[in-house]
Image 1 (spheres, rainbow, N blue to C red):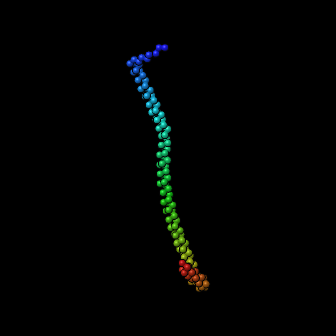
Image 2: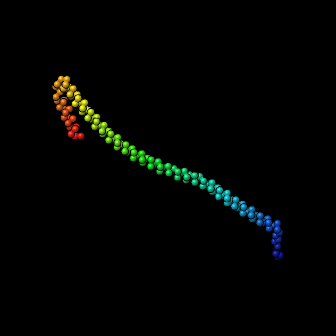
Image 3: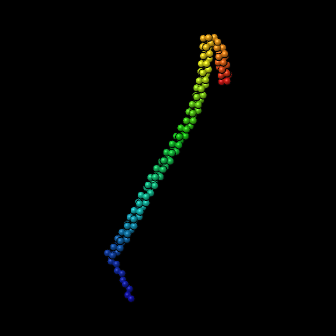
Length: 131
C-alpha cells in the first residue's frame, strides 16, 4: 500500500489559516453575544435591586419620621391632658362661684337664703382646702 502524500500549496495554507481565524472570530462573536444576552438578563435584576435598595432607604427614612411624629404626638397628648385638667378645675371653680353668687342674690332679694349661703360657703371652703 502506498503512502498517500498530502501536498499543501500556499493557497491551501492561507485558506486553512483564514478558516481557523474565521472560526475563532465566530466563536468570540458567539461568546460576546452570549455575554451580552446574560447582561441583558441580569439588567432587570440590577435595576430591581437598585429600586429595592432605594425603597429600603426610603422606608428607613420614613420610619424615623414616624417615630418622631409619634414622640411629638405623645408630648402633645400629655400637654392636652394637662390643659384639660386645668380647664376642668376652672370650670369647677366657676361653677362654685356661680352658686355663691346665686345664694347672695337670693339672700339680697328676700333675706332668707342663709342655708343656701352656708352650703355655698362650705363648698367653696372644701374646694380651696382640698385643692
